[in-house]
Amino acid sequence: MNERIKRSCIGAYILAACIGCGAGDHVVRKVAPGVSYHRIHVLDGPWWIHVIEVDLQSAGNEGIELRTSSASSERGGVERTSALAKNALAGVNGDFFFTKEKSHTAGLLVRDGILIQPPQRRSALIFSRSGRPIIGAFKAKFGVVLADGSALPISGFNRAPDENEFTLYNVHARTQYDSIRAALGFQLQSIAGQSILNDTVSARVLQLRRQAWPLVIETGQWLIAAGSRAVKAHFISPGDTLQLFGRLPPAQRPIFEALGGGPRILRDGSISIEYERERLSRAFAEDRHPRTAVGYTQNQSVLFLVVVDGRQPGYSVGMTLEELAHFMRTQLGNFSLSKENAYQGLNLDGGGSSTMVVEGEVVNSPSDQTGERPVANALVIAGVQ
Image 1: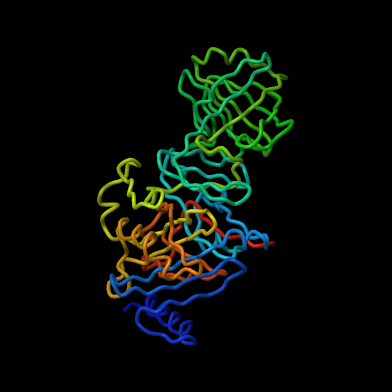
Image 2: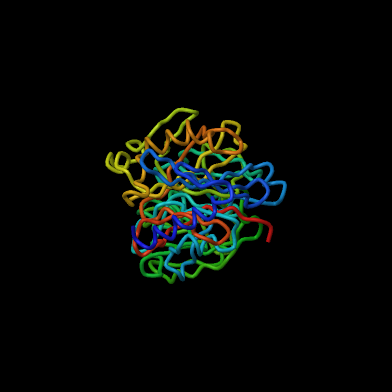
């Protein structure tokens, strides 16, 4: 047994000693009102499973919220989970990241109502302002109303347009060369409204740009980029006031936070491993790996964050997605304070990225010998600051 795993085992024994430590033990730690951490040893496998259980009503009454956390562009768009959850009560790693135009991006990401990344083909988790979770596959729809009252569709977000398209950039945009390349660009300054997802943003056209220009967008500014054959680009002039809007159907409620993942593993109380629909491989689903997942109960009142350690023979071997979904759907209620299982469930990034942090401490055993990996973002439980 390597030293990293040995330290983790010793820590678990000390924590469990007060209530009687033994094979298959389950240790519970209250973190905050409505928030509990469970450390579960299941002999089948064997598996060490870590669960954060959140009673959303009780936690919400104390000002505790589910938030997303991501690294700044100065950090290259990635950071360790322990750093992303540094000031939170608890947290887990979030979405996958992949390289596109040499900048790290991920699926849907909304923070405090502001869109940072649009959705991809995979499922995501969103939270309304009231804190209720929804798992689904969302598709972004953006548009702009011009000064003459006509509307234009916006086809992309924080990317260059094709020749017939308009795309929209905000302050979170990153490109390969720190510049924007398009036939025309219109820099906008917000007049009213901040979130195109939850509001209509009124903005004035400050200036016209051509071909290529530095990516310099300040908070409260936007940029519309037009392809070479986007005919209605000539209907926009400096000084015009435009109306920007966006939606994430099928979501209807105002969106407070959102985090991508994939694939969905529980749908309406049934195990549903949707890796093919979300363009993931059979091996990804059927091999045992460390896993991170999120789920919630049928009435959306209790949220579960789950991390399963893996790739550590004799300690914890990891789970297939089927095993993970089965545990969340049929066994989680044996350990949860609510005595309920998950009814909806979503897989998040796993493997060496699977990390759970509670009160500033990494409580699981990440599988890499070097410890935590940098990740795209995290889902954190934030207390009152």
